[in-house]
Amino acid sequence: MLYSIFQKLFYKIRQEAVLSIAVLLALLSACFVLPDASYFGYIDFRTLTILFSLMTVMSGLQRQGVFTRFAYSLLSRTNSITSLVFVLVGLCFFCSMLITNDVALLTFVPFSFAVLGQLPEASGKKHLTPVVCLQTIAANLGSMLTPIGNPQNLYLYGKSQLSFSAFLQLMLPYTLLSAILLSVCIFYLGHPHRQQTVSSSIQNPTTNAAQKKPALIRLYIVLFFFCLLAVLHVLPYPAVFVLVLLGALIADKKVLAQVDYSLLATFLAFFIFIGNLGRIPAFASWLSAALSGREILISVLASQVMSNVPAALLLSGFSNNVPALIVGTNLGGLGTLIASMASLISYRQIARKLPEQKGQYFLLFTLANIGFLAILLVFATAVHP
Image 1 (tube, one colour):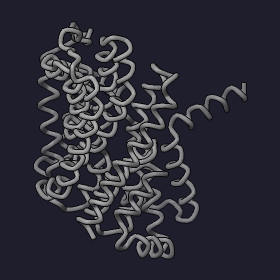
Image 2: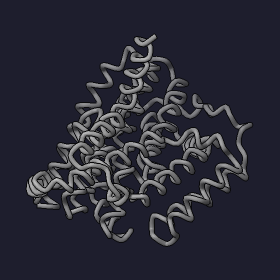
Image 3: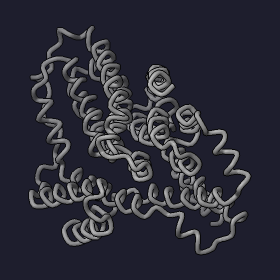
């Protein structure tokens, strides 16, 4: 029985590796800085409550099939492999700016499996791996444009004191270059099949139309705009948090089970860890000096081993150059499979549905990510010398 308990515990730790490491680091730091009233000051409640609100609203819209219906409305206008791939990858790129990179991949990667599965077997299977790879890169790069595109942007935007327009201006050059690079890859992928038509082959892959509730969709759209206003400091975030929570409890309780509470717990643990490190003078001085003038490069490197959300949380405690951290942690989402935890969503889909191709996917993903990262990092060096 004891063995079974340890086995389950090990499995849970492996499933939530980032959270487990964050909790361990928080506990270790508490050995050097004993818990006291200052711990409450570490916690960024604004980020936590807005993140919870956004995840709840996005999960609600996803449950109602809003995103897949929108995707199919675009898909019905395609007539070639190239235009089909443009839609599938473009959905991840543009939608991630508003619905986050995680939700974009959770929605559109399974959608792509359903759509490409309707093509002739050889063509559909051949395109699945590169399309999912490009979708993953697109979601990570598209999400960097807006403060709500990914968790690290939401957090760093709150610390930066940047206006919404200033944030967009900061990330727009990287987003435009990313769009050009993705377009080149899509044309290269679709060129050998430019004569193949697909419009007559594709049927709507969504099957849960009976579950759609227009009133719920309207509610979540209104709540989404409230969340945006909270991000922009127009509405008080506690009021929006209460409205979203009450709305979910009254109208759609099941949506609360789909919120990524492990991400919220990871944020909480890192807040404690970073707060404690800041109270260790020798470490704080060393890391601040190491970061000075190298924020983008160190953010990218740190993201490769701990993923970009923890990297943003850690490094923001020791640098005032938040715009450089925003750039670095967003570019840092490229590279290794764990550089952005959103990338694991796609990998798990491939491993579950096409296990024989997971090695091929991993190799293609790594090479493509390194290529994109190298180009964007050179560009960042030119923009932020």
